Image (cartoon, rainbow, N blue to C red; front, side):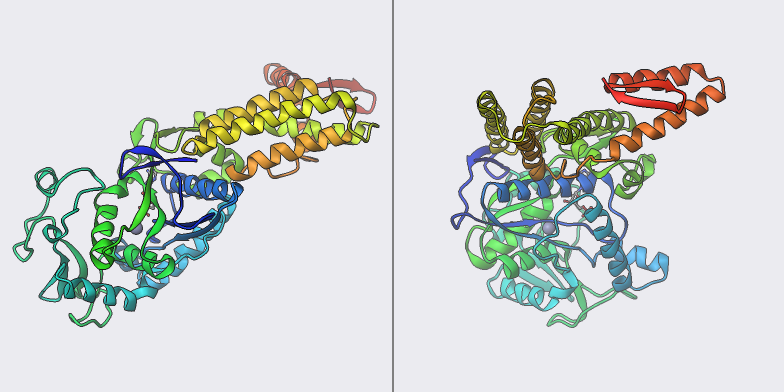
Length: 465
Ligand code: AMP
Ligand code: ZN
């Protein structure tokens, strides 16, 4: 299996530290709001990667944190007139609602930064003892110049980074790139006691600490959205490796952003969608299919039109499952017939291809194409004369290949029927309203799905062609 490592900028053979076991840490949300579709892509991508690793027989310990103390949390809690803790509790609960709806598997642990304050203080103390951090008036900074590998993830040295960055000159820091690992309390801010007075952790230190506590000194995969590579992950590396003297993570993985109508998504541009809003309109399978329809390292462009076309694609897959489920009930042939044996081999070739694509740095875009090819093949070759055993094999295979992608797990029994009934009703209404164009369109759309309508004395009936 090959994985693209941001650290080396190339695809590498995936060899975990311990055979068949994977320790994986993904940077999670700051819980001050509902999560948006950009966050959703990152969560879906790494959930898919975790599921695929499990499919390939790895036991994955998967940690995703909640950042529940930072400037954004403090600002929002103040606006809502609640405590930072209450704000965190609320949006963690909302996170689970949306993540569960999106079929994102629960992490082994979702640590909250505020539950690790003691560990963070110990971490900071050790950095000071080792000469990697220094205190100024209750703030503690990491001394970047002291860590000789600073910049290795971004592939830049300290001077380049300094020249390229817009940094507020802070006289109290030894170097402009130094960053806070502990922040002294400002008026009305939540704070904890520490050897440096009342204060709170800097952002980066929480991930270094929680990864260390829950997974150990060196982990297999550290991941997050591409915006986190610098400075967040660079700073995590500096802290963790300064403390342990060992490599922090073997593989660094970053997922690309979601843009909206080809623009960066932001509240100010008014092109911001929460996952919840989209979940109200679309089936989770459609949203996931959309998120994985591009390779995780390429940006995807979100628009209602692109979701609509993903929905149409998903309908094709669901119709095919529904057809197979119907054939299963109709066929009289139980056991696999000799001539069908050859076809099983053809089906297995699709599975091999799927694995080959996914083994190549989790190429979900190509893996999805393989599933569409498989469905097309099944649609032409599996008929009412096929055996139950063959039909079951097809259904199981579709489910098997869908599982790592978090899609295609539901039976379609009854759903197609309900959709058709709804459309027939809509068409009747259109006819009453003398909207012949709409009535014709509904009939033609159904025909394109292989369904024809008949007028009978008992009313409209439908059947498969
Ligand atoms: P945040 O709550 O902003 O800390 O982000 C949580 C996760 O979502 C991080 O891994 C971010 O890198 C990722 N993320 C934030 N915005 C986007 C976006 N527009 N597209 C993809 N991932 C994003
Ligand atoms: Zn992090």
